[in-house]
Amino acid sequence: MSSCYGKNIKISIFGQSHSAAIGVVIDGLPAGHAVDMEKLEAFMLRRAPGTNEFSTSRHESDKVEVLSGLKNGLLCGAPFAAIIRNTDVRSDDYAEIVDTPRPGHADFTAQIKFGGYQDASGGGHFSGRMTAPLCIAGGIIMQLLAKENIMIGAHIAEIAGIKDSNFDPVTISSADLAALYKCSFAANDTSAGDAMKKAIADALSVGDSVGGIIECAAIGLPAGVGDHMFDGMENRIALAVFAIPAVKGIEFGSGFSGSKLCGSENNDAFTFSSSTVKTVTNNHGGILGGITSGMPLLFRVAIKPTPSIAQKQHTISFSQECDTILKIKGRHDPCIVPRAVPCVESAAAIAIYDALLDFKKYR
Image (cartoon, rainbow, N blue to C red; front, top):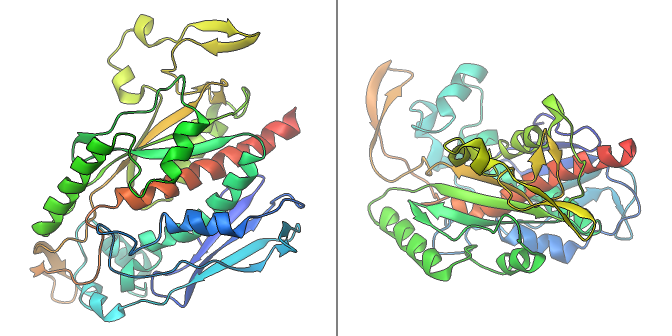
């Protein structure tokens, strides 16, 4: 199993890209809550492969099979366990990479750590395929958060240097997030989305790939969730988000651009709004001292270009101990970003809900 995440809910993910199935075990979900399986399936479809022209041609339904944890559609207090069966696998496509690691992948580091016993097919347990069980957990927990009037949503902020219009960090609404759930390509600005699609198609046409940035927001969070130092909201979210293999960076609020400002520009002035304390701006991204402020929680994630590309690449041969050229086979996304959007939402939901349960106990 992958390492457990969480203090109040513990999440473990298991399986490999080409194993019989992949799955998740979630311990600690509160009993008595209904799980809408149709909503969960719709959420899973946003991540599933083979659903659009920019996705890998691998076709997996990502049908969730619940093994335990539900009784008559309600969480029953037992550990929630679910699997997704892998059906469309071509392990022979990966025969070469046992000896010749793919640049940008974990093939080399897995070889060093596991001594050649690792499953290289489809990337094994390092594969982006393993984000499907993450989305099972995230999809369920987003339903639990909705009952607390907390909503999470994300959009494609940038691909290949082409930028979408960002969320308004102060006034983002549930309608803004709900609209993105219905988009096949989650961009706020359709013209920017079209330009991004062209950039992906252009990269694909020359056997290359592109990366980008995802912006995620959570609204409805009360002030006071989280903790200082090692259990801060940024820490918890970052830990969950980096479970997504393609993530290479994260920033909250004004992030790195805020480092270029003066304190007088970056500070958010406090004000009363109907007896509730708000801030006029939201450069802090809804978190101060690791604790939520009640403003929208906002962060952005950098997603690297898909390392599996059709162009020839320089690598090495383990057996021959020499440099060589690799031409990768298999089916791969020319851009991971669109399918990573629900993965980022899932990671945020898991982290936020776990911290919310801490908050409830503390209060």
